[in-house]
Each structure stands twice: as structure tokens, then as C-alpha cells.
Length: 262
Ligand SMILES: NC(=O)C1=CN([C@@H]2O[C@H](COP(=O)(O)OP(=O)(O)OC[C@H]3O[C@@H](n4cnc5c(N)ncnc54)[C@H](OP(=O)(O)O)[C@@H]3O)[C@@H](O)[C@H]2O)C=CC1
Ligand SMILES: O=C(O)[C@@H]1CCC=N1
Image (cartoon, rainbow, N blue to C red; front, side):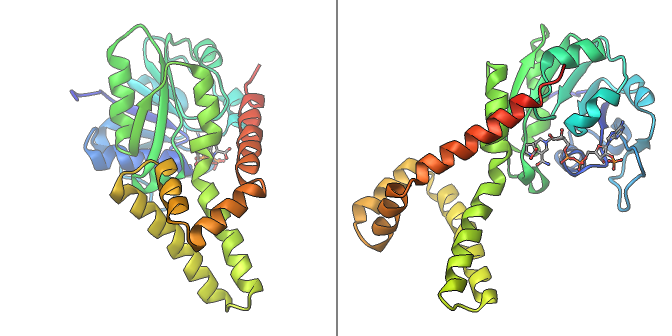
């Protein structure tokens, strides 16, 4: 991708803002002189090597692309005029309409990475509301540095993915935690239970990536094998596994929607 200009990250000191800043520098899409990050309380220790400011208006002045990475509850306090600039929000729930209204920009995108952005393994769907065709390419190029991206053509899908993939990075750990606790109940020493559960999710993820099968194919092939794994899968499903997952995703989806601001 051609030069994308100067990028500013409001909330660049936070968890996700820092991960995006590191990905931008790591992919070479900007240099430290073409990246400004803002902080509120304090510039972090071991800060990313770029320009730092506590002044969001100054950040906007010197940026062509602005990434909003503050918590949804802090959004109302951000007062910037980004007219004519591309504004990309990673905030859960905050709508394109609110971003356009409060920044004065008609070039707005929402992207929804997850916690694995920190290691370049995020899944990031994005939605672009801009008349400039190149804006989608810019958003895609930025988040490819954090992992895998997909453009979606409905803003509602961003709220859905806030639950499914945005929050989803935590769900394998939930499964592993239940498995670890079960092993401990069976008398396995906790350190061994921890290591076993950890290696199961890491190995399963790597296996899934390596063989390229869809998750549904993986489950089907284990069921067809008709051994101990099949017994576990069938019983988990009979006891409501899929229903529980659907209910959890629905709760996260509704929470994302409820964050939609005034
Ligand atoms: N973490 C994740 O996995 C994901 C997060 N998101 C979204 O990303 C956004 C950021 O989340 P996350 O990084 O986890 O949150 P953090 O709390 O880690 O980071 C938010 C940062 O924004 C800073 N901040 C708040 N107000 C201002 C301001 N006026 N000017 C400059 N900086 C400000 C905070 O500073 P201070 O230290 O003073 O509070 C903090 O450093 C959220 O909207 C969240 O919904 C989306 C997908 C995944
Ligand atoms: O848990 C959260 O609210 C944030 C938004 C999506 C993922 N993490």
C-alpha cells in the first residue's frame, strides 16, 4: 500500500492502542516520526517510540488518519474536529453516526480487533462509511499488521463481531479453565492441570491453523472417529454446549448494542 500519511492514536497508551501502535511500526506502514499517540494520565513506561502528546487536538492537527482507542465510557469527553480526515474507531458499541457527528468527519470506519492484536494474531472485521474508495484499503492495511482482516458491509455485524471475535479471544481460556478445574477435581496437581489445559488450547489452535479445516469439519471428523473424543463431544452437546455458547454470544452482542451512545 502507498504511503498512508501520519497516523494518530487517541488512547495510544492503552492495551489495544499500544498493540496497534506496535503493529503499525512493526509492519513498516509508518515510522515513529509518522505516528502520534496520546495519553490521559501518564505516558507509559516503555512507551512505543513515536511522538507522544496529552493534547488530542494537537494529535488531530498533525494526523491524516485518527484511530480512536479509548473506552466507550470515555468517548463523550473527546472533543476533536477531524473534518476531512479518516477516523477509525475500535471502540465497542460506539456508532458511525456518533463518531461522524462528534468529530465532523464524513470518512469514518469501525474496526473490531481482539486481544490477540498484541501478538499479530487478531481477527479484525471492519466497516467503512466513506465516499473515498481508498479509505477501505487504508483500514485494511493498518489492521493487517495486527492479524487477519475482513471488510463487512453492515455496521450491525461489527456489533455482532464485538461479541463473537472481539470478545471471543477470551472464550478458549474459559473452556481451558473449566477443563483445568475438572482435572483438579480428579486429583491432578494444579500445576500439571494448568499445563495440560494450556497446551490443549495452544496445540488445538495451532493444529487448526496448520490443517486449514473449518472448525465444523474438525468436530465432524472427531465424531466420525467414534472414540473417546466423540463421546465427550456428543455428551457436551446433549448437555447444551451450543445453546450455552449462543446465549453467551447473545449477551455480549446485547452489551455491545447497549453501549451505543446517545
Ligand atoms: N482490549 C481489547 O481486547 C479490545 C478493546 N476494544 C476497544 O478498544 C478500546 C480501548 O480498549 P483498551 O485498550 O482495552 O482499554 P484501556 O483502558 O487499556 O485503554 C484506553 C486508554 O485510553 C486512555 N484515554 C482515556 N481517555 C483519554 C483521552 N481523553 N485522551 C487520551 N487517552 C485517553 C486511557 O488512559 P487512562 O490510563 O488515563 O485511563 C487508556 O490508556 C475500547 O473502546 C474497547 O471497547 C475493542 C476490541 C478488543
Ligand atoms: O470486553 C470488551 O468490552 C472489549 C471490547 C471487545 C473486546 N474487548
